[in-house]
Length: 167
Image (cartoon, rainbow, N blue to C red; front, side):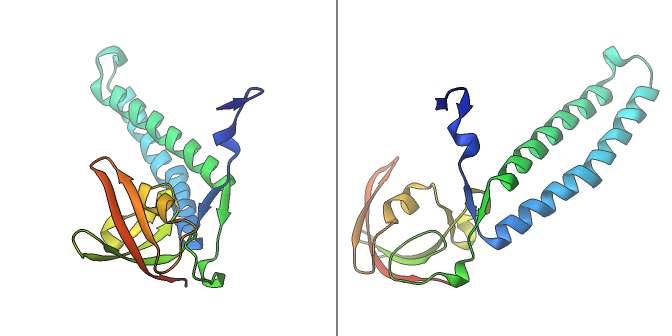
């Protein structure tokens, strides 16, 4: 989506928790200091082996350098566009970013709890789902007691919101 040559997605804010922001900054620092210098050493060692056209180590190190620089660029962009939201200061009974939502699947009666976090923080194994996930998008603005249909690749699923908590 472009507006006079500007990519709208590149200027949109990226919501995240303070912990998510700190994690991104730590990863960025590691990539720029530790990983970058290790890759430079690997390239120098591979260069010392002679003919670069048939030097697999050299080509692998250069490819790793490209991937590292691309990740650095991506993280710098995300950090620059970060909208850090302190969940501990939020309240209410309406689902929004940072909320911990208790749900029951109306078909299976299985209860689950998810926290809605930024894309980089999402980890389903610990109950953190991305604000852009189908479940989070369907829940936004809803309240305790609401029944919500979530469109998934496997079809519609229905959940009831048992509770909304912050902090």
